[in-house]
Image (cartoon, rainbow, N blue to C red; front, side, top):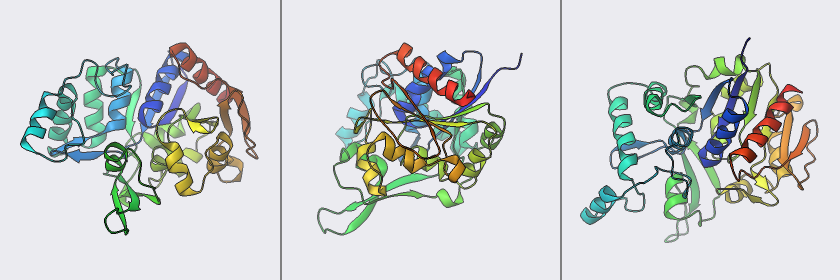
Length: 319
């Protein structure tokens, strides 16, 4: 019996939690998670990959269940010591347990290993049950164009500074993926799309997660060439994101903060867009021409609810 091959394009905590549901819904499937790396940043000389780590920790049962990110039972001795030295940036906290991941990753990258091989090596410890793949081995970093409060002039700051330091308060005028023009899909990504029985776009941020992944040259084309149906899940319930700051990002690219707005932003595959099917939350409506729109509960309140979401998406992929 040939097992089902599923590819999930994901980013952030929402993508990590959704992957828990996919793994539970299809325990015998081969699952490939293509994960956003545009949030990556270097702090205190260490290379940090927040989305890859969120997926790895969550699927490896090591994430903090209260915060939803970072390590369980985390401590902050090194963070406090760095602050005592006045070592900038003080607004980005590195937990002691989390620090070990960044040390190993940076050491391997400095030794010449590509990010995809480093990620696979790190995943050996956590056994996430999916093939965890970065969108690209090349460095891509998302920057946000905002107004400088001192001068009023527009400037670009790293996404992490905008989101963590400023809590997404400065009005974003644009999002720029620095380095994306020179990036290539990581090894295995194109092949995963080509052999997929189902491709799911997780309910992750459409602009800085899914949008960044699909900005890698050749990756969108590989996605659209897949023989399977492409099913997206709305990250918007009602008029607000379930988690994160999609409501701050979508208006900057001219997209309405609604399930319909995001669905139309992705567009129908038959018209050059992405979607064959679009899954929205019960009670929401979405008129997306050319797309099979389905309504199911989309709140990931527990594993059973998330598994049901994933099952609905896989059913749409098999339609």
